[in-house]
Length: 385
Image (cartoon, rainbow, N blue to C red; front, side):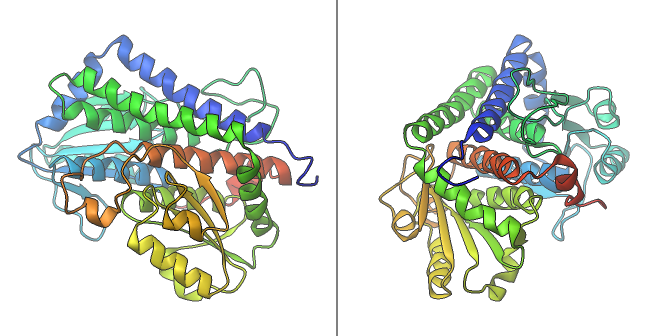
């Protein structure tokens, strides 16, 4: 199928389904906000204690994103299983992120935390799972995997037509991400429910604007996808994906899905092994992050291709990228380095969410274009966690 005749139906179907699922989850929470209030009250009870996040794979990365947001509003946060994890003590709060609710490492950590008299919260897709039954309060998030391109597509279950919507938890992970942003927004307002919805609206507005802009001019997205595709067909070439601050977590989340396409995705630790013809995807809401631009500069010296995602089409990153996707959500052209030493440390990461679902939707389109099945993507997923 030539670039001229390719359509973006799988991209749009994936993108719209991810947004629809998030909106459905928000509506469900608002139908009975008492669960949201209880969840937030337990977090607030740890203001003088510590919050611990635990999860595996992309769920763990989404948990890390949530934890970094909590840090930005003054909570002390630790990540269980990491080298600098702190001890769990009485009245600390442990938050598990697990779509199935049965992930072994996550549930074992929760059980151990209970023995230490910690309070337990969970983001999970199964209200009857072990994690849910152990928790003091839970957020039920739609989960499952589907295929795009079907008018019957729902937020859970299996659809039998179209391209795979990057299976193995995409709906759960992307929805947990946006719900987490709403929770943090609720924590800083006098009214938890009002703050929750205000934060959610900021995120969804950015997502809707991003999709609107893509529809107006599909050419950059088509070139973006066409540039990534050969790296699935020729895995001897490497793909790197990089960002700073919260953007680095989005890069890590997206790198896992890209690897499921059979792409040889290298970590930031392997940057020294880059070669001519390798690909760099750079994510920077501001487009001026010094650490991200340092990678771009060295990538150019190595004659790598550069794809950029930013909210500012006139930024340095935009000008240095071979192909640019303009992603809505960031309103100040302030680098992560300056943000960390200013009064702008807290913000709703609308750009990050819009970038994450854009990249996941690109994966769905590439899978369709290349005939990559759910089974082959699943075979590329880590199987020991």
